[in-house]
Length: 168
Image (cartoon, rainbow, N blue to C red):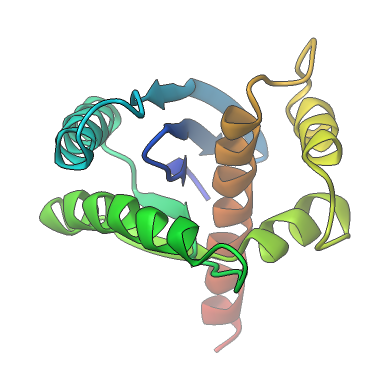
């Protein structure tokens, strides 16, 4: 599978993103980072900033697919899911405008894919990313590691889909 894949860890404080190129068995990080949005900024302004940043990333790299963390709502923190839902909506809108395939990935699915444990800690994910991509140090901040993990899991899901189609 040769493809450019974008992984996004959505948020309205910090959004992590990673762009990976898969060429055969080789993986290359084309771009990765975080976009930060000050909590003091009005909610709608942070959404506009997120939209602008995501649009620029997608326009620059024109990925074949995007992996984005699925919504998760913990009954003790329902506001987190609502805020994340707004951020995901902006990301999905930009993907839809460009007709880019989106894979919605549960955090437990991503963790299990990388570590074999759906409840892996942030540090375990960072260490797995370092080892998988042969990085000199663990990726920081954790939002960046999460975006890399989402991109890797998205590649795995796409490969699995291609294998299933080849069998059919």
